[in-house]
Amino acid sequence: MEPMPVPEPADRPMGILAEPNPDRSLHATLDGTVYARHPVRTHLVTDADNPLEVVRRYATPLAPDTVGVAVSERMIAITEGRSYPMSSIRPGRLARFLVRFVTRPGYGIGLGTAETMQLAIGEVGAPRILLAAIVSGLTKPFGLHGLFYRIAGRQAAAIDGPTSYTIAPYNQAATLGPKHPDRAAGELSRGIGFPVAVIDANDAGCNALGLSPGLDRRFVERLFADNPLGQAGEQTPICIVLRVPWPQGEALPAEPKRRLTPP
Image 1 (cartoon, rainbow, N blue to C red):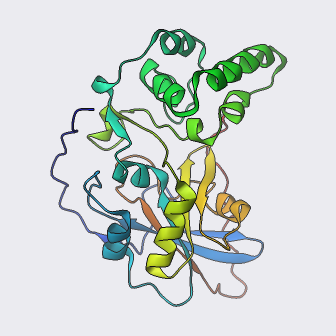
Image 2 (cartoon, rainbow, N blue to C red):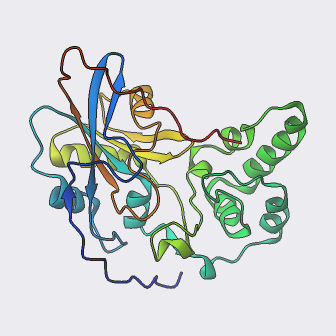
């Protein structure tokens, strides 16, 4: 694949932010406990970066009562060299055929281009993608949705295509999910001494792709269901989670809810 040109990052504050990203919520309540989800702004991460060094540079030192750290799966994948300019991907006949039957979600591209479909075929294999497409096609008329990605698997669902609101140069790139997300989460956790989750979040919810030992998948997915880090130009691929004592008598923040319903 040809190397991706990277512009100089804009001059903006870096590190752990006290305020939420625009149109996002800092606090959330789960099972009666209030959590603060602090976004962490970094430089524009590329395949020249080491994810542990990025986390250490911008998100440490961490408070002793830190619940954990969440890291965007795209950041991990980019550092693994798994993001490709669209112009470098050559879709085959099968990818060009199958993409005609894909319903694009309202929160991204997914496998809605021949290029991202080709990446999915290369990632999980043509037989699995074909099976997913056949089952999806047969069940959609009966109102059953989402079976394509369930059958194709998390690695196919984690593929990100280009969108107009994605920060450059990744607005012209397709990115696979991390190769070994659990391993990545474990390595980061050992490096910083706190639990780490590698998450794939968008406005339709959150999938926890990788977890360090001791983290509960359902807890992580509920806590990030409303996509507090955003997915546009925020440049905040890391989140610090803290428990927050809430003033007695004040209404608790809302439980996180996904902002869009998947197709």
